[in-house]
Length: 162
Image (cartoon, rainbow, N blue to C red):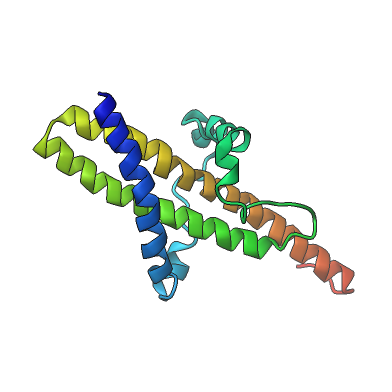
């Protein structure tokens, strides 16, 4: 079982690199704009039920907080569209990594045993799917802030808001 868990963690970390490489290629396509607004779970209740709140706490209060420093709101002068862009890159990289590891888990389930594949998938969900879902939730929050920011700028310019 330790061997399965170690392999799952290793392949998930490797999948982050695969995700970043494939994402950098995808970034240059028109298709990227379509996938940059993915929203698998819109319901706050469902996000809470699957434990995204706990996952968010873990990310904010452990060494994981040091992983992507570009996704931070330092102060009110932070460029929100840039933070959102970085969140999208992280989200899609994790999704690519999730798909990559899923294929490996299926292969290991068939070639070795189901427990091996299942262990890989549990690790994959925690290391790729949950980070992607968290980024989607964060993007929804950022989008609200961007709308509020735009509305404030329009009002301060003397124009009427829509």
